[in-house]
Image (cartoon, rainbow, N blue to C red; front, side, top):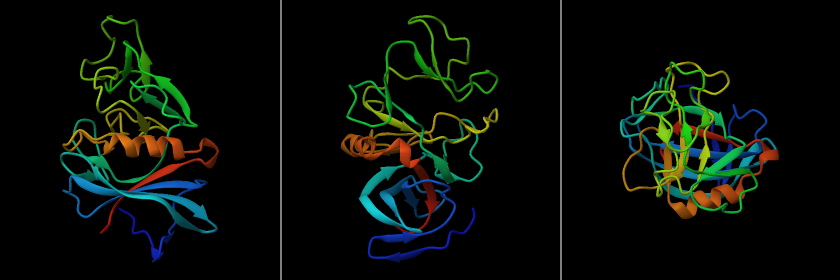
Length: 210
């Protein structure tokens, strides 16, 4: 993992590799095998960042974090990634300024590396057998975790088969995740209301003391 130069004075953070983002979510874990982390929200202030939310307790992958995440390995990918322009959820729109898709029967995230729709949202007829591997996620079923979630655009531009899929910021269930980042339902909703699509928000998942 690339070493990121940091300067923290009060709630001001300076570092590189965030592209054009003007909103940033940091996920800081203390060690590669950690299953917990701390989440903070930041808004660009000139060449640096000013804290806008957090710290929030979070869970990450059940097998920790990795710069070489692959499908099904139970790690959360390290790096800096865009946050998707569409938020999803089983519950009604929490007031996000992102486009919002309320989940219904037949809404899936394709996690089959051999599928043409790998690592994409797919809708099929409710009750139909999906044309991709059954390990893919039926998004309308995990009512607690997927009440609302934001998409971390890991392995998205371009999609590489087998490199990993369905990395979200979703609601806490009390245990480590399969690779996502989870925070409390209230904090997911706060995050979704804070995100501004025109600010090209990003998430930085890092190893550093919180």
